[in-house]
Amino acid sequence: MDLILEKSILIIVIFSITLVIAMYSTYMERKVAAFLQDRIGPDRAGPFGILQPLADGGKMFFKEDFIPAKSERWLFILGPGIAMLTALMTSAVIPWGTSIEMFGRNISLQVADINIGILYVMGFLSIGVYGIMVGGWASNNKYSLMGAIRASSQMISYELAMGLSIIAIVMMNESLSLSVIAEKQDSWHWNVLYQPLGFLIFIVCAFAETNRAPFDLAECDSELIGGYHTEYSSMKLGFYLFAEYINMFISATMISTLYFGSYNFPGMHWVGDHLGHNWLAIIEVAVLFSKIIFFIFFFMWVRWTLPRFRYDQLMHLGWKVLIPLAIINMLITGGWMTYVWK
Amino acid sequence: MLDSSSSSYMPIVLQSIVALGFVGLVLVLVPMLGPKSKGSTKTDNFECGIEAQGDARVKFSVKYFLTAILFVLFDVEVIFFYPYAVNFKSLGSPGFLAVVMFVAFFLIGFFYVLKKGALEWEK
Amino acid sequence: MSEYLFYFLAFVSIFAALLVVTAKNPIHSVLFLIVTFFAIAGQYIILNAQFLAIVHIIVYAGAIMVLFLFVLMLLNLNKESEPVKSYLMKGIGVLAGCLLALVMVAALHKSTMSPALGNPNEDIGLVGNLGKVLFKEYVVPFEVSSLLFLSAMIGAVMLGKRDPKIEPVNEITN
Image 1 (cartoon, each protein chain N blue to C red):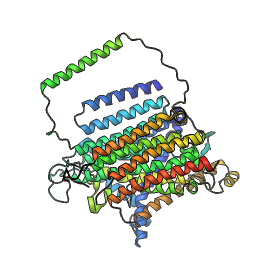
Image 2: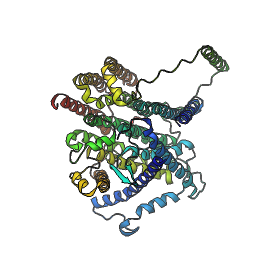
Image 3: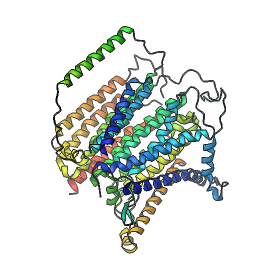
Image 4: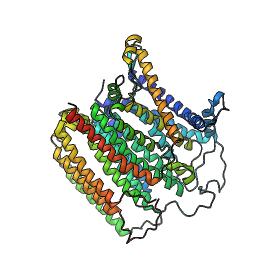
């Protein structure tokens, strides 16, 4: 019973943090875009426009929610539901810190420490494709359907390279569990130093999976109006857009956890010896979040730097470049560790 | 430490209940907040302001189908690598050679697919 | 506790499977099949076959069902284009179903329940142990399966590629 209470509180805290970060990512996106384009960005709602996401959220809540006459009603409502559900479920296996000792118990800062952690994330990534396909089909609109088929083809193509690039890390750590991978990246032994090619492949696939520029062909305005979310309004559209930001947050978290040392930082043992266990845990959480925010900023930075890819260039990159590269990465890592690095 | 029993999945069930509750609540309650009005042109599908012609169900190119099939095959290959990667050190050299042979067969298939041009996307 | 969970998941999987067969819209069938797969994956987790559960989700619900959905969307099914079956065919179908039920009842009628084989090792479903067994004892079937995949790739390309000289291109390509 105690365990259920403890986990429930942790789940609700993580949910709230996820939703708040996703909300403020929308604000950050506009501010970063403004900064890169040499203008100011939103600054009317509250000081420096801080209350802008609340205004946007309120607008979406109170808009009229209509369902087009020719669409299939239940599938239309199900689409954004699936997108949001898969986005929220992925955060269950991520280690947010080591553990906190409170009330005489050792509360671990990871919701579920299962021993197939990475595959759980990959599984929910595969399910996330359905949110887009069902939404595009249910709209009964040529543009939505074209956008949905293109977006889902893009997502499944880049899933393969993503799965392949992680194998080298699993080889190094001999475990699929994210907590073990995070623990082994002690101090400054971050995985990016050992797997630079894997990191590059993973980050390109993360861009493609979240449908972010330069891979955002599925929802660009000039070609397909809104793509698979053309016919959606009010909170259903809100769910699709929100799910995209939550996916971006989770991708940034995965990149930090797998390659950039998760909650570890150089000098952490000195801090642990001098300040105690709980303070170390809190500083670790803060370090993890600063890495995540840096990567979210990186996502937005790339959006306004690179032009959008054409669809055939995108598929060429995913199938003919990234998959062979990831396989070569895996073979080189395997060969090196078997024959050279005894 | 790492718990290998199936009881470590219980928090996932909890999280799914919370997530389903949140999503269901918003999808049911929020449409009641907005105004409602009826109008025939409003509920027609959007096609850049032109009258929509015919159904959305037009035939698509078979390239998408090929992409999906190849995705299934490569996904299963990726899945085979994970048990190997977890036992990497204890399987040593014979295991590595077995995987190299596996990858070689797959690359033969991949080159066949590339040469046949199944992954070519015309502009 | 795990008994209640088992009964709940079993009920969900059978109910969803029945809905797969009886749904009018093929897209609804696919979605109910995905629900069935999730229920079966839950059963695998109860038996501590964790790797099998997650692979079931990734490959079946995540890859093969996506393929099915693509095919359904390509096929462009409409109510008007469905062929109407005659009463003779429907009668023969009912007869075949009844015969199958008869055979199954006859087969189970005289059988006895043998005790279930005890699990030699509780942890056999974990990735580590599965990997050891796969690569030490079953290496040859592993290599043979890669040949199966090779033949599947060749078959898929043969079926999918049109010969541009025979069939002119007249569909929406991108």
